[in-house]
Amino acid sequence: FDVIIIIHNIDHSELQTLAAAEAKSHNLSPANMKGIFAMIASGRKLQVATWNIAAINNNPFEYWITYDENPGYERLMANVESFLESPGDRDVPVNAVFADDMFDRLERRMEQAGWGSVRCYWENDFKNRRIVTEFMKDPLLGSKRLASMPDRITNTINVVGSTDPVCRPTVINMYDGDLSTLDQWWSAWETFMFDTPLEIETKKGMQTNPPYKLLQPIKKSKYPDITEEEEKVSLPLQTMCGAIFDAILVHIMNTVSTPDEWQPLKKTIVDNLNKKKVPRTLDILETETYANSDIIALQEVSSSLIDQAKSRKILDESFWIVAPADMDAVRDQNS
Image (tube, rainbow, N blue to C red; front, side):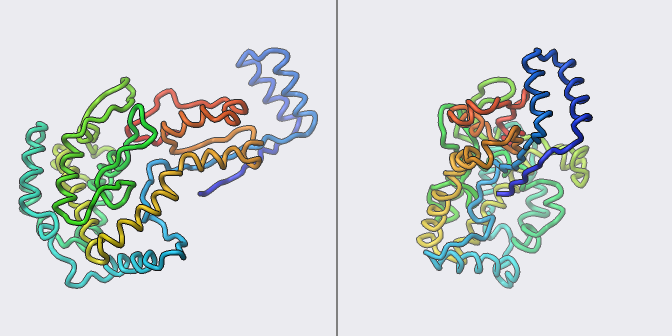
């Protein structure tokens, strides 16, 4: 984790002037003012900590970690890197991984959702792309957010009444289902996206919807590389690209390793790093180094962390825990 400690140090007379102005604007009581000026007179400095929690990131394979207990980890990571850097004849067409019949099923689901057709994009473009050089490494696909946007929204979803999030069937999160074959993955992925109602807290209150309804249009005004035609069908287009992306990840893992090796390895990493991320983060905030701060500013925080922080006696008694007025539990990157 990247932690930065900032010590605010300005001239005492300047600080007194600022404090008096702030006190007047916020109608602070004489007792509050006395405490503020006592701190200034003592020469005490304001200690502020800031920490980007990166709540959205639950990918156990994003960072290369030290895992001496299992040499299979380093072998797996090296093999994945080799596949991506030098795919050779393994750089097969997309439809050799995300098959045509999978797209047909996805198309029916998207039609039932009331979305426009993206078959022309599939037939004339995406099905024929090479999985590494023309899909995974396509910079335009990245700048259009066609794979990353659905991943951000559906990767890990915090639901009402549970401390355990719900995860999309993919390699790059805490999903613990069996991904031994592409058929197993696709069946789980389709069910998750379209048939699994999830109760989440939104700006409009509690809502229960399957994950596909959480997806948001990709606007050209924000992502200028997307074309006007693509913007009109950005919901089904990103859903298709998200499915292709996940299929390729499963294919790569089962090509460079075996399910019996990489899936237990992933589970061990998830259990020790990802699932314990929120409580471990709060443990660190409760240590003397951070608990002695006057202000701790947290970025990209999940709604779950905020709720759990309020239940921690040390944090709740030492700080006013202030969440954004416009909390967004869908993107779940609150500061």
